[in-house]
Amino acid sequence: MTSTSRRTFCLQSLAAGLSAVTLLSGCAVTPQNARVWRGRFSLRITAADGRLENQTGRFELTKTPQFLRLDLLTPLSGILARIEETSRGASFTRSLSEPAVTRSDINALLTELLGFTLPVVPLANLLEQTAAAEMSVYGPWRAQILSRFTDGSPQRLRIDGRAGQTSAAPLVQLTIFVEA
Image (cartoon, rainbow, N blue to C red):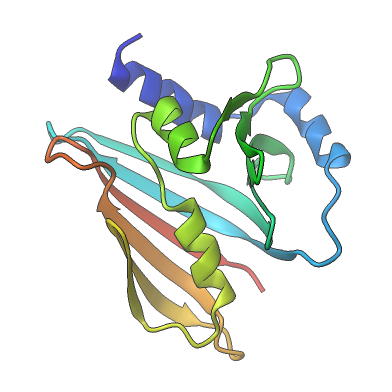
């Protein structure tokens, strides 16, 4: 499988539903001290050759100091795919009938699955900050808060950057809308 077809397959897996994985929603326990954000996302990837890939969907992001879980959801809030990171490493689950893909950390996991990484950890950190600057830089990622809730927490934000170290790495633009 070529890098492009593997990336397309993984992106489609992240955005296309598998009914069996909906069962995962009943299996996960949210830690009592967790912060949870829900909303919509739009992901735009521009390859070096100019090809565009667009994905949209719903998400639920759960974070504690020791745990990070990103669920990509169906319109009815069933889980399409789950990415988790703990002190033991990171895993990607797409179906109960398939084994989870695990790696040492979330960046290694996403690089293997997609051919590049996405700013999952910077997104979680940014969402926690009610007094964050309107523009922040996290390594290759630039995050811009486009609007805020009345308590100061980010409501709509955009994260963009080159998803790799070379000029051939795709340009990624991730727009997030957090629901109250």
